[in-house]
Length: 402
Figure 1 (cartoon, helix red, strand yellow):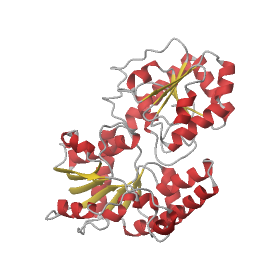
Figure 2: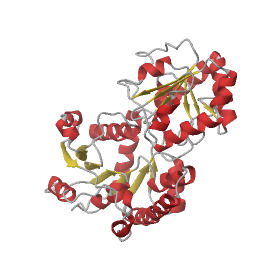
Figure 3: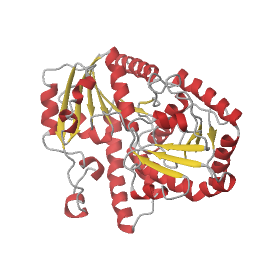
């Protein structure tokens, strides 16, 4: 098939969870089909760094320089705009003409684009090819959960509700016109069928891992002397910030009572001040961005995933398990993955229970090793990018025949 892929960013370097999904699925599709790739390139940085060569698996590649417009005021700009502000934040006048020029004279079988923010561009592409949206998260679900978990002022709540109202309308428009939607987990599908369109065509494709990168043979376990818990992810991302807040308020005091020597490693780029402040607590280290996260997986006795805001699938879990690091997660944190509590990982949803689960694994090497090995085998069987890319390719080919 001839596929046009449109992305709202250049997914390289592969240093965010979303970038892992987008980059690896593009690569896997390109091993099976001809892919033309158009990316918005923030401030032209990726082109300046020569990152086009990282996408030489594609037939044609264009990075289009892009700058987010300022967030508009409620009155008059935002109030009389039909699109949600989280979508107009990706609007730039020269993008559509650039896409039209890139696609001129091309005959595509389908248009694959990432996330709702690109729907206004994708639907306007001068091609009769069906549109399919791959979603790293469902914005309507994500923003609903943010609204319920975050402490916001009355004005902020009003602005978010106004955006959600417009977002719901845009979701329904897209669902009516798309050939299909690809989501990360069954919770996303349930939400879309309940809140947007019960009859929409939806395909669930979990996130995965590259086992040649997160490879236990290359990075064998070399545990720190003290019992060490890792939390890995972008530290300016709301679900991670909220998850750490919940952990330190509801679980860590109990864990410190049980294991005063416990160490916490918070590893990830752009830690906001609230995250940096945890580094002042006893035994807590906030690293910021690191050149390679795999040595931290080697050191950690386990990884915790104390997330409360859902949507999508957590790459940190499959990466951790692939490299042999056991996981303690909330149910929401592990949603979308066919992993069983006390077989492939440990699940707990209340602060004291979460602390107990961590304490148990830190104190019981046999259980840690059992969960790590079972979780690793399940991950390598079901969640490699090669296997997932094959599933997506098969789905697209069958969809085109329908």
